[in-house]
Image 1 (cartoon, rainbow, N blue to C red):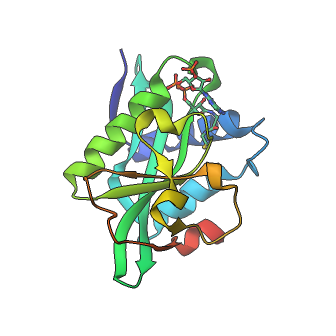
Image 2 (cartoon, helix red, strand yellow):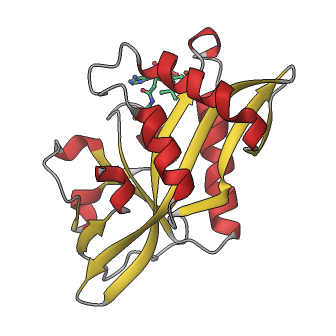
Length: 175
Ligand SMILES: CC(C)(COP(=O)(O)OP(=O)(O)OC[C@H]1O[C@@H](n2cnc3c(N)ncnc32)[C@H](O)[C@@H]1OP(=O)(O)O)[C@@H](O)C(=O)NCCC(=O)NCCS
């Protein structure tokens, strides 16, 4: 059984290794997710409770990070979250750990009062957790990306009603 809990500094080296291994052969990756995570940890967008690890037999088997973003619309800035990245050690993939991390992160984000999560990810993977196309909500990401990969989930029904706008990411995403 896996245990999911917030990350601790002692986990950081293992998380870095997982990020490097998990994304090593991903054609959509620039293989710098480990550096992105390090920048986000130091940024005001970081929320310690929403950086989580999956522990299997006392070892880190997977990691997920949700950080603060805003959806900028005529209504002003609506706080939301970016899910980026999620990774599972290649030795442990396809055992449901990624799904468990995503569901645990949703629950924790809901408890903290967040209404939605935005992500750029695999079109076949995230809809099973309730993600829908950003396009259907009139939400845009601030860079070119295929519409099928730009997804959002409402953690609270109606959280995105009337919120049509552009996602504003933390500067750490672009450094
Ligand atoms: C994507 C990832 C986090 C999923 O975690 P996991 O523990 O392997 O996945 P789960 O066991 O929860 O789910 C398995 C399902 O995910 C699917 N899946 C895994 N990687 C996928 C990918 N790159 N694209 C589409 N589907 C994928 C599997 O095909 C499987 O589908 P099935 O249930 O229909 O057979 C993990 O495979 C990983 O770290 N991949 C490399 C890094 C990455 O791509 N991260 C996501 C960036 S958007």
